[in-house]
Length: 301
Image (cartoon, rainbow, N blue to C red):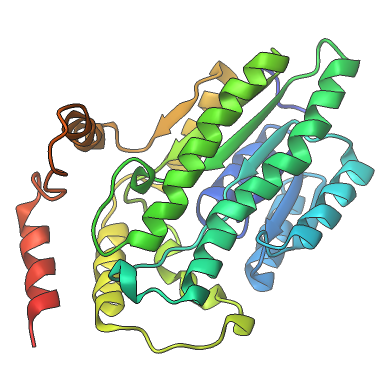
C-alpha cells in the first residue's frame, strides 16, 4: 500500500507503451520519480521525453527484462539514483499463439523469458531492497504489481505458450503476497489480470530478439495472431483506465485487479470443473461463434 505517491519512486517495465506508459503518465502527475524500462528504444525515448516535460525526474534504461545481468545492472542504477523504489510494476510482456506442440524451443524461451523471468527478476532484485528500506523506516511504504492476464486464470486454446507464462505469474504473485505478509506490513503486492485491452501486445513480434532467429509462423500461429489482433483491437476498456485501476489498487492494498470483472464467470466455470473433477469446460461457451470459427479455420485444407 502507498497512501502518498508524491516524491516516491516508481520502476515500470514495458514503459514505452500500453499499461506501462499509462501508469508512467499517472505517476508523473502524482509527482513520482520514474524509472522507465523498455526494450524498444524509440518508444522509450518518446515516453522519457513526455515524462520529463511533465516535470518528472526520469531514469530511462533500454533493458531486456529476460536477461539477469541487465536487470541486475538496472536495479543497481535505480538504487544509486533514487534509493529503494516504492512502486515496482513488473509489466513487460509479449504475446504468442499457435497450437502448443508447434511452439519451438526459441518461442518458449522468448515468451517465458519476458513474461515470467522478467517478473522473477523484478521480484528477486527489488523485494529485498524494499524490505530493507522498510526495516529502516517504520513509515516507509512499498508495493509490487505484476502483470499477468486473464489467460493466467483460464486456458484458451491456440495460446498455450502465453497461457503457461501467465499462469506462472499468477502463482508467483499470489505466493509473493503471502510471503510479504509473513515478514512485513509495509510492502504489499498486487496482480493485474487484463482481458482484451487495446495495447501493443498483439504486435509483440516487433521486439523478438534477432538472436532467437527469424521463423516462418505456422498456420495456427497466423490464425492466432489474426484473432488476437481483432480481439485486442476491439477492446472497449482503455489502457489508461486499467492504469488508474492499478494505482487505485496500490492505494487501497487490493491484490486482484481485473479490467473485465464479467469475465470471472469463465474462471468460475473452470474452477467448478476442477472441483467436480469434470473435463475442462468449453472456453467459448459465452461466445460460441469464436470457437466455431477457430475450429473451422484450423481444420480447413
